[in-house]
Length: 118
Image (cartoon, rainbow, N blue to C red; front, side, top):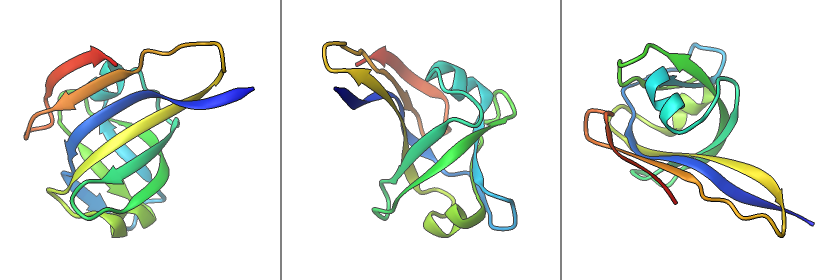
């Protein structure tokens, strides 16, 4: 049996901007992608701490060190700049396998405050 489990998450990312006219996705600082072991075009769940909205999208690589967290396309309707969000990636694993997810916690400037294994 396969189980869907948390593989990695970025916690308390602050939305820096939204772009309704972009095709869609979530632009994320390349440094944050690497810290969480996430990849461009990877599907993620996004949980808006500020307003409760939850949605799926995919990641695109933003400028390294920029702190960019930009919701594009339809997702731009679900958050506004300064909203806090959680970005979560999941994996399907055999029941017997264990996982130790990467957890990346950000400060108010979207810099890494802590990075640890779950």
